[in-house]
Amino acid sequence: MLLYHFTSVAHLRGIFDHGITVGDLVTSFERFEGRVAVWLTSSPNPEGHGLQGGRADKTEFRLTVDLPEQCPDLHKWTDWAPANLTPSTRLRLQATNGWAFDRWFILFGRVRKEQITEVLSTKTGLPVQNWGDICPKEQSARGVAYDARHAWHNRLLRDVRAASRAG
Image 1: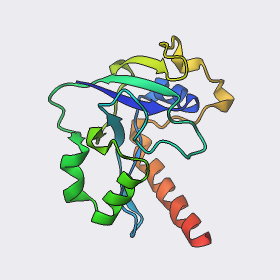
Image 2: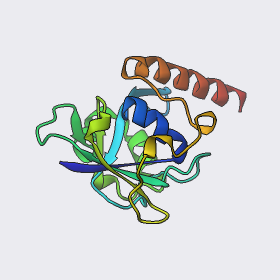
Image 3: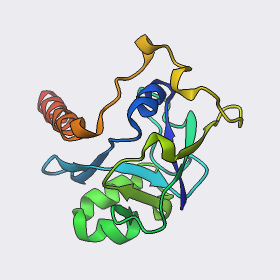
């Protein structure tokens, strides 16, 4: 099954080293709760996925991912979200420029580097060779090893809670 993951240039080196291992899936905005999940889409276009507005341009590169047809950790958003998110959280995620939510998938696992069949620059429309080192190491975001994904998520939630108290 071919799906897509969009990311920034700063994240390519970490993905090359570890695969796609992390992503934050908010399950309750009200309680600051969430899970680690990799976000994927069946749409080849970055629009409608709520990727705008961050510090990094998460629409800069499209990774094509080839997953097995029978992947028990892969869930279609519209099937999974109603039973696992608060209704207000689901609506907030979908309202944040997420009009293509019917094409979203979440993976409670990782995408191995070998499962990434193409990296495409959305700016040029051309495939990118040597994508693991097009961004200098000192400008790259630190990759997250699969075994460290829960510690990464706990730090993220802690930082969000602290920022919300300060604001």
